[in-house]
Amino acid sequence: MIEGTQIYDSSLKRSKAVEELVEAYRYRHLIFQLIRRDVLTRYKRSVLGVAWTMLNPLGMMLVLTIAFSQLFGGTRAYPAYVLTGLVAWNFFSQTTLASMNQMVWGGSLLSRIYVPRTVFVLSSMGTGLVNLILSMVPLIIVLLITGNPLRITVVFLPIAFLALAAFSLGVGLLISTWAIYYSDIAEMYQIILTAWLYLTPIIYPESIVPQNLRLWLFTLNPMYHIVSLFRAPLYEGVWPDVSQTVAALGIAFLVMAAGWITFTRKSDEFAYRV
Image (cartoon, rainbow, N blue to C red):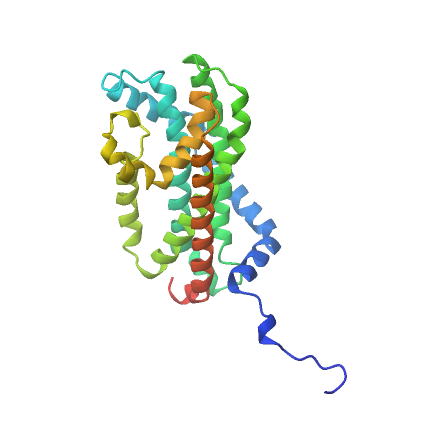
């Protein structure tokens, strides 16, 4: 061997998933700037500005309360019940849709300059987290007005946020990958989201669902477990069940890993597909 030469060992090459993770960290400042751009652009064009993020879930809560409060009148503090579910659901639906749209409509940049493909999805999650934090303000106000004081259980919220963000990231990566190859995914996913919303006990109490259907509607529904993690410490003022917490976190990180691996394996082809 000639002194000073380097031998390439393919066995030492990192997997695409790990390489993408390293590259995403290297481009963390770009992710921050994309989040900053999305937040500023959204509120700059809005007459109500930041207040819109707070008023949007409140408006939905008001409509749902008027429409369903009599039907589900037995639910304690129904407005608070609905809003705790809506805040979590809105984060999931908005971030996954934004991830897909950014990859489909903003992916043309991939053929012009090099950026880690995951930055678009990660920035969508970051923007969603900003909106989620802002949405907590009207949620806390509604909780207090409806007689649901904040308890020590609110310290569990970071874990609920973690499960929600991890699951949303995984789903966002998966549907973004599929949408690059099949343009119909964008329209189909919105229909799926609507159906998924009504299959999750957000606007209705789970007690109205017959016991024999709960396995299919709730136990096998990832968003049921994640919404329950979010709702329990706020609305119910109790610590979430350990088994449900483990199930929610396990599902969330499993989906995130599956989304990350699937996305990174196909990412080299994205520039030729968008």
